[in-house]
Length: 331
Image (tube, rainbow, N blue to C red):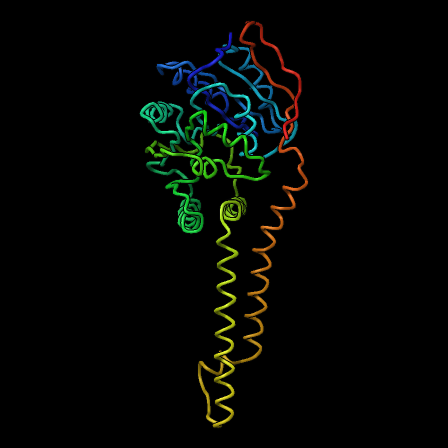
């Protein structure tokens, strides 16, 4: 029989994780059983194309007392899958965890203790990252750029092992954004945020779902979703370029009036073709930034469902027999 109000809910998005799910089960349940807390685990199958959904159903049948499975009708993306899990969770503390075992389930206790100490948002910092070099370098660079633009402080934004109090989760659910970055959104609502250092391991099986392009896209969404600084930066850059162009052509006029010879670098700078290429590139860059914001508006005003739930496997509180809940659709 499922617990009506567990202290802890663990939300795990799953997308094509067939190769590593059993290893996750073998470590996750014993780790949570050792905690002095009632808990539930919510697996969200994000439209997997392998046997992940079948394996989640089998695990639910083995541990229906603490296991719930949300089956999305189609792939919605990691963050939307987590939001679907948030809507179903019952716990006072909600922890998000990736299914690839890069963040050990044994570390969940650290986050739970931090919440019990009074924090409403607990981020995590990977002690020694086991990622490829390019991913580590790209992540650190994006972290610094994101913090400067959005003022959201996350030492390690790529780590999804995080804990939230119930009121933070409810505040996020009240936001009807089509695209969002959950850790950053939670930070904007938190009053007592903190971070803890956790262990990090190499991926147990399968492959990363984030390519370099996906990481760049994610950070574009993050920066345009939480700040207008890119637009302000481009406006300032446009003013500076205009002033520089004005000074350049004033110099050209002075040169022609006094017929002075100009050599070296100044000839290159004042070359009209090079200046034209630079200004065209600047305009295209600005249009790209503007397009990011317009694209977000376009996605939002259509008001399409962020995800569709095909079924929910859970044991009702008043009946120990496992059942599949009817399909629902969330806006």
